[in-house]
Amino acid sequence: MIRAAGPDDAAAIHELVVALATYEREPDAVRATPESLRAQRAAEHPPFECLLAEEDGRAVGFALFFPTFSTWEGRPGLYLEDLFVREEARGSGVGRALLVALARLAVERGYGRLELAALDWNTPAIGFYERLGAKAMDEWTVFRFAGESLERLASE
Image (tube, rainbow, N blue to C red; front, top):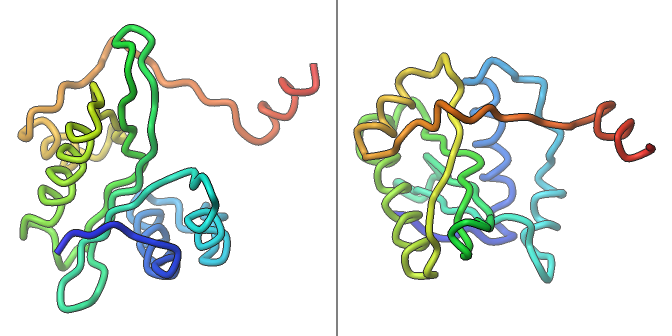
């Protein structure tokens, strides 16, 4: 079952985020806490939305996303920050169900695109997205200001 996550799902979301970080070889990188996720989901304007996939009442996957805007399209889109399915649930259609639900949500809202990034070594994910019709944007390079570089830029 796929459903929208609310503030009371913060612990389950956090558990999945930690599992994703471990899968992506960054187990100590998670700074989010169940408390911070709960507060963000409960905010008047939450900074993210999340779909949970559940089997027998247990969260086995999630899709965490937020709106973007395309100046060329002249309308919003969705950015999928994280899609993760627990190892024991992979291959059962959970990931596909999460992406289908997210695509339906984007279409229902009149959004023009659904975007995401995949680590270049994550060939299972890349193949999965391509089989579903996603196109790699090889001509684009992702840049990020974070931590010290963000602070330095902000102080200029």
